[in-house]
Image (cartoon, rainbow, N blue to C red; front, side):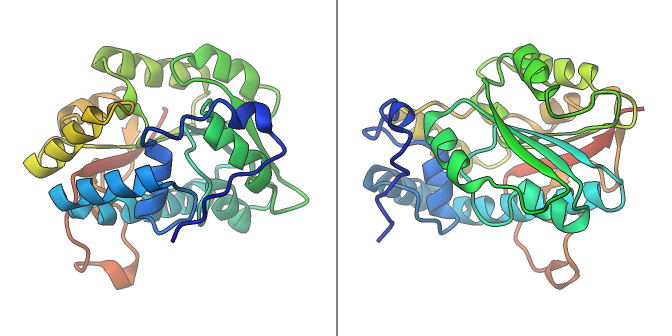
Length: 273
């Protein structure tokens, strides 16, 4: 059974958490095999998995995608600054752990405004090296200007920054606003910066049905997009090979090549010229 505990010292944040409705971060944590979830999350998670069984694979593969992306950014691309917007619950191999294992001096700013995520972040998102920096910003991704203002306290916006939106912008109801959020953040970072992003797509009826049932629970809806819409968020940027593809097809590790099933989520990494 999942562990029904949350860090206690930050009661002001904990008091803001609604435990009567399923929560995206907790459900995602459940599908990934984590312990930071509640009975309502497990019940809804199981119901959605019955409609779209690949949701469990999607959750696990989304983390593998993040790991490969950060590995590329910190390694081949030489990034030393990361702005991870819409962090979600800390789990295995978080951005700072992957980046600082490759480049110990990496500076990571996590961004979220969910009280549940912030409660855990204060306990679990700790620096892994003496040279680097790991911190978080309490901000809503609907307000990019606040995110940028707060991130400037840690990141040098005169040097390239890797901006990450990992499966969170489906919670933006309006597509034009979604594009605007990405564009405003990328406008603030210098040439040589990168955008890494993925979202769920509308190419599988079962997944669309699962997202509709999720919204029926009263939880914050998740809006699936077309691959074309996701691609538009990278306008003006230079795509890194292999471009916009299913998560399992983005530079898979050698043992996984040809073995992982397709899922309804597409992602890409692109460089700001």
